[in-house]
Length: 134
Image (cartoon, rainbow, N blue to C red; front, side, top):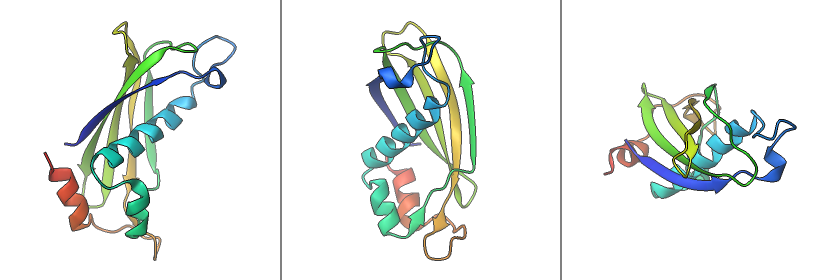
């Protein structure tokens, strides 16, 4: 299963009056992780679209585990898993980079959809090859 870890800082605009990250930001962070994992696998998402595949979000689950304040350095690990014949599941774990604790985790599920028809398609061979890369 392909996996990628990246670090990022909580920006001021991502915090709320309680001096922690605003809850909706996690979905944006998940998107960054998804994009960077796909790039690290060797075919950036823009190339997926060029090849006629979209990955719309159909399900998201987030578990809030702890706080993260402005300028905290966070570490996110994203792992990609095949979910049936036409879906991908991105599993996300966000922790404080200094090891002081978890921040959030969860997953998103995305069907592979033909850009041309707007309908789900089976996993293309080139995606299967990416998933099986070591």
